[in-house]
Amino acid sequence: MGTYEQLLEGFTGFTWQHAVMLVIGAVLIYLAIKKKYEPLLLLPIGFGAILANIPYSAAIGEEGFLTILYKAGISNELFPILIFIAIGAMIDFSPLLKQPVTLFFGAAAQFGIFAAMLLAASTNLIEIPEAIANFMGLDPSAPLFSLKESAAIGIIGAADGPTSIFVGNKFAPRYIGAITVAAYSYMALVPMIQPPVIKALTTKAERKIRMDIDYDVKVSKTVLILFPIMVTVVAGIVAPISVPLIGSLMFGNLVRECGVLERLSQTAQNELGNIVTLLLGITIGSTMVAEQFLRPQTLVILLIGLLAFVFDTAFGVLFAKFVNLFLKKKINPMIGGCGISAFPMSARVVQQMAQKEDPTNFILMPAIGANVAGQIGSVIAGSIILALLG
Figure 1 (tube, one colour):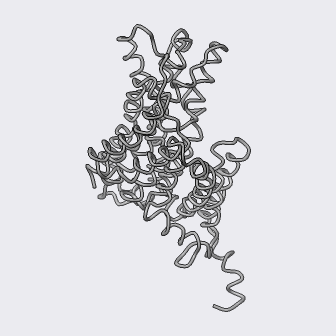
Figure 2 (figure 1 turned 90 degrees about the horizontal axis):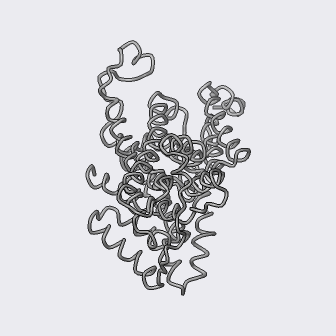
Figure 3 (figure 1 turned 30 degrees about the horizontal axis):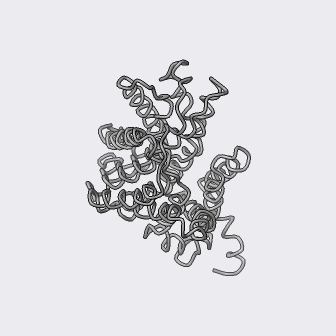
């Protein structure tokens, strides 16, 4: 190709699909900057999508730096593991240990994972007319999603970006862009998704329930140190495939709680978390190539992901109301919705809802307890799926 043709190849190779993806990238950047929706991730993802959808972009391809980053950090699951170390260093498990019942909310809210998995798998029962399938570029004789791909889509319901990447890369690499964008986008939209669901399932009186902040319980340093070790051992024995995820999360927490690695704890929370988040976001954005992203399956994944978040929230709240039937000192059922892994956004949303009903009500710490339980629950649920289908 001559020099003249090389100068024009960007224009001649530009299609409407590229235009759509550039707009999607711009929208993600807008949401990050203007609306402040998860800006640490949506902005790099949006810009990565722009870099990947410029025709003949040298940022992707065999020697592109984004492809190199993908091979170095996503295809081998390194970035999600490092992110979990940073998250673990940020988490305080004291609220969970003071009120252990909140651990069950973290388990109950994972219902959305399995509901979304069933929804994705059930799409194969729908018969698509051959004419429509041909128009949409689908094979009418082939399932829309395989069982493993359905499981990877279901992980969106964990409300946990790193776990979604970890499972999606193993089970559904061709949909990794759609799965990751859905997971992080809906995490950013938790303030819009959760309140209507919680309000629909609770009464005004229930939303006003006050909770003890400390429950007259003090968690010793020894317990805080032993907790991450014991969780790693137990979860690892139950599901050995969970060790990379739960182990990195708990290692980060042990660094925080041990009291002798303050510099490393701060490094994990700040420098490590910031650098890996930056690289992770722009690399994931680069997987949103028009040819792979703009297809009917992406819309189905986004819809199922939204329903998964709704199911997570609803089942967590309903489980909290069920637990209240057996408790003299009632739990504010809104914290059941914090059992998803969207830490700490979900806890903040519930605290804001409580204060709208009663400005003097403070349930943030119990909500945080349920939220960190959801962090553990999402990792274990993802690992169980990996163990069963892997």
